[in-house]
Image 1 (tube, rainbow, N blue to C red):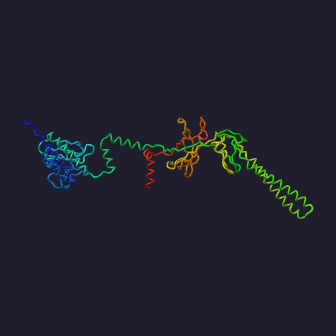
Image 2 (cartoon, helix red, strand yellow):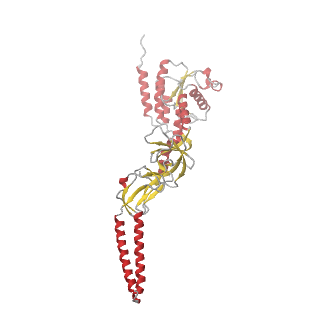
Image 3 (tube, rainbow, N blue to C red):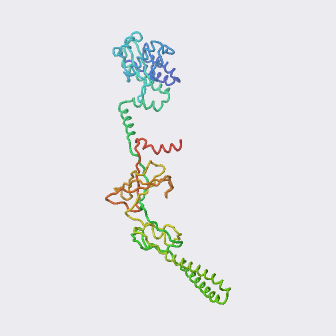
Length: 444
């Protein structure tokens, strides 16, 4: 017995696939599917069902355009919807397994043997389905060829599919299987987990209520008698101003006083014999008093060139070399006297990371050089407006008082990073807060 010739069905399969790719409209493609598939396998009736929307019969063999109100077309639509749900992978239709409403009218509309072929790609839901019916049974060879052709038809139909919205793509992805749906639900749950809003800022430990030591007069700092962070007592010399100019001024004032005193003495002697000199004596006395006041003021300034501590504490300044030889003006701050046990925290909260921080909220200091240490503090004040920091960015000044602890407080001048805590928000909002802020600035 000669083996069956398989070349002709394969040629027909290739030709039909090419014809499907050449169609420019979904109507033309539907006509090819229900009518020209006859070249590959004989059948008596064919119907193309589209899954778009609620589902509809798109084409019927032998008809140019199906009438959706016709009883036959309505029965076909219900049949195809049932087969799409019950046989997503395709199968030969078993009449006995059909619902009563569909099985009753089968003999009236369809031959005895029917084959359901989903039209879809492997990685996407089916675009629809093809129902073929005839009187003879379907062979395994024919079923395999028709399934291959149905795959090509599904690929061709997808080219006419309109672009789906994000919602439709999400729904389609969730329909793919339980695992994907569970992962999507888990992702949504994770995004809704409430977490604490936090922000990081630069921070520094500064003295609390320090005493400010100012320059007592205009001059040049001659020397410093203390070192940075040195403990001092009341009366300890802190620094001296240069006295060269003041001593020269005092010598000039002393000579001016001597001169004025001599002129007054001579005028007083001459006033005994002359009425004219008697009136001049009062003028000489006033000039002598003026020069005496100038000399006393210069002496007082000389006594103030040495600045002493007015309270106990430590001297807070950077370096003596920054001040020695520097000209200062009256009232200019030179250093601070602070109690090392009374410190507070100053944090610079960037304007881009602003949180609803209020007095009484908690922040945590992580000092530099001590990765295992942390200090909690309570916010005492928040600046009402942002200012430019030394690093050149806008930030709000936040002051906080350290909570009592057995290990003591950090030293004055300690730098670190402060973590400020805000309210609670979903994890998705916390992760997208900065990008959303940038988008808001551009969009408005």
